[in-house]
Length: 60
Image (tube, rainbow, N blue to C red):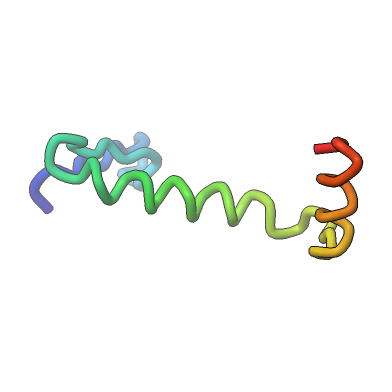
């Protein structure tokens, strides 16, 4: 795929990817958001009511 470069290990297994940000820069932010969401999927959940309470109490 043009603008995407896969870097492989000694067994030719894909390990890293380089993305042409001039070509795919707008898509990068979406991909990055997905990475952040995936990394936080097991975080403790906080209800909207609790967030509002924390906001009102200047705890955020």
